[in-house]
Image (cartoon, rainbow, N blue to C red):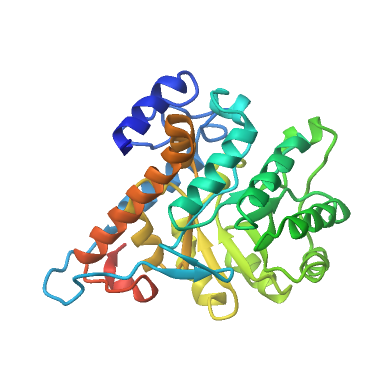
Length: 338
């Protein structure tokens, strides 16, 4: 199975939900939430794509970076390249239902391990979705990360304990889910967190604690003050708030402000390996991969996830050779032009 077959299968199986456009720019799917698109006019999805594409790489071929090193370490785990699978749920109402949430969780968690990296599992109003993710982490002998919706702290801590028992390597919340109406419809309200709330959550576990959904320097600083281990610069794939900035627009300033205190990861419109290179050049220590792994699972199940990640890894390797980068740990701003 190759990436072309994976995408062709996914396109056929996701009709009406995702068109697998040649340019995944958020135009065709604008407003399709639930679904695969961005909320409202799709502006946040589109901007994340457009601003990342505006960043160009500097080709260099007179150097000694003939065999770049892609390996890195995050959350105590050695990874074959600095990319982690993003936490995603809702296979029926978002993706068309070709795979269910249990199958999707297994595909992504185990397929990520096959590709030499790890996955995050997600949380939603249906408690079975989190349960399926936890079971997938158990099958992977704890090689996974549990990301929980910003519920009441007591509810988050309950789920943290479940993740600990499963052997997860890290836990966290996707704070950008604070306004999700779907959670309230399930009778499980979510909302924003104060610094004190974050401190309680950080202190409730010995595992690295993550906050996903940071888009400003001031909130990155607050996370650092609260003792958060890692933040993820993200606008939730453009799915929760229209007219936000793109993650790549704010990443560099956030890294300058807190990068020496906490880990900074990022996501947003990563569709090929050169996109990973751009985020690393802006200062991220790693990235999250989202929609492409949905295509991977639906187009080829666990093997499709592996193929998708391996394709991104190989593209990153080639991009590093052609930009003179010998190691993912020292990719710098000179690699790109904004």
